[in-house]
Image (cartoon, rainbow, N blue to C red):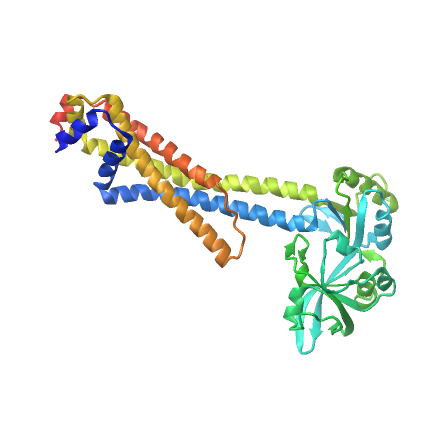
Length: 417
């Protein structure tokens, strides 16, 4: 039987013949073949999952910054220090600064921002949330849309009106009607009339807009906080026109604020300017390096799998020494033997890669979407990667065993027991 099989393989071997013989050889030792394939499965699965994790993190970061807009500039009060910005009780930015910035030619909209934590009461419900004081132009700066009601206007800001615009999440937490316009909430015993509810927006780099209450900044400073510095603000957010050069604008803004704050040349800035476009580019670079690191870690599993295939093929050469001797004795060429052993190696790698790809995609999509509720992107390049890995790993790990088998002396092989 063995001699007949060898005679068939000496002649003109077709691709089907090679695959059939490779499968017969692999399935002849199921346990060993399974353990070998398992290494490739784990390796490819790890690469696919790591790629999905990296792309998901990158997309989440990009989405959060995109919600602010890449043409958005943020100016924070305080002096930059290692590890962050030292703000404390520094009152270095004012509403007048914001109004002056609004007059600059590249500026589309500007709003000062003051934020504080607060307990909000509605009926018998009591919830902790963020209270943000802003100008009406904040809607244009942060792309805020109104679902119900309206937003307060500049007249309300000048008069410190007790109006509130709520996010949908805090509306649900307080068990208010879906359209709570006209309802009264209390913040630190100050009644606020709800005049609007924003559309759901999700998280952004400035936190969740859905779990926030927006009020006129003068109302927050005078009525809620009772601040001794009613014109001072924590932050100024700026939206530039789409065609504006944000890098040049940051340089101009730095010079303007230093002049307005009367800072000497040897004095450091009492503010920090953050360009969302530059920050997003920096974060994209960081996440890119992170993806490469994750893939490199996962690639170690592929290396282990390749070593496993090579070991299996070397053992197979030793076990089939007599078979190889018979093939060479009846006329098989070295090229045919090399092709046969390489085909077995590639087939093992291909099976493992396809199974690993299916499991990896299934786990990343299932866990990401159904359990963690993240949008996990699916791209074709992990599929192409798996096919490439199947061929490259299979060939690389099968070269040494294949050439070893081809170089066996037929006389010594026939004597092998």
